[in-house]
Each structure stands twice: as structure tokens, then as C-alpha cells.
Image 1 (cartoon, rainbow, N blue to C red):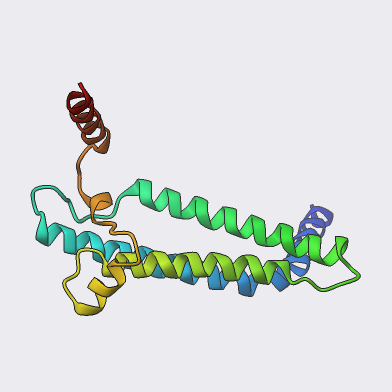
Image 2: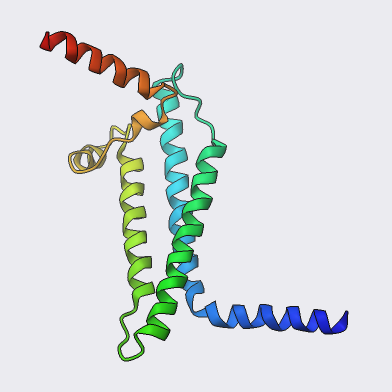
Length: 160
């Protein structure tokens, strides 16, 4: 039993040592995702105030599951790119993990700006809405497939 504990402890330490260099990237990406989730929740509350009958304004487990999946995927990509950079491209430092974390954080920042500017009457929000997507519709508890079907039916009627 003592040998098994030592083996597991040594293996755990080796894995941590191999990937310790990627932990700052993982923490930065985690922080970006948390801020994005907070901004999405704030948007949900604003939509609830504006459309109380069409929005619950609550956190949804599906959103949390997607967030967890996103975090797992970006960390796997960071680990992969760090390993490729360290062992495959030993002749040059390309900093692939840095680039991947930076791109991911930029995407999250754009999502945060979209969330904060959606369903917002502030002047800065209106300026941002000219460049960004309005995410208000995503927070309405409406079946979008039925809206798409209705739109297609209307288009078919207009072409006939």
C-alpha cells in the first residue's frame, strides 16, 4: 500500500510539473470565462426587466455545462500547443500556448462587450451595437425554430 501511495504521489507530481507552465494561461482563460458569464447574467436580468413575460432572468444549467465544456476545450488546446511548442518546435520558440490563450481571451472580451451593450440604453452601448451583435434574443424564452419556420412561410407566400 505504501508503494502505491508513493507511486500515485510521484505520478501526480510529475504531471503537475509537466503542465505547471500552462497554469497561468488556464487561470487567465478561467477569469475571462467567469467575467463573460457574469456579463451574460447581467444581460439576462436586463432582458427580464424589459420583457418580464418572455425571460426568466435565471441561471441555466445548460449554460453552465457549456461553460465547463469551453474551459476543458481551451485548456486541452493550451496543453497541446504548449507540448507541441516544447517538444516539436524545439528549434524556435513560437509561444503557441500564449497565442491561443490570447485569441481566446480576445473572443471572450468581444462576448463581454456584446453582453454589456445588448439591451442597454447607454450612449456607449448604442455605439458598440453598431459594430457588435445584439444578444437580447438569446435570453428570451422563445422557441427560435418556430420563428424561423414562420419567417420561411411568409417568404414563400410573398414569392408565390
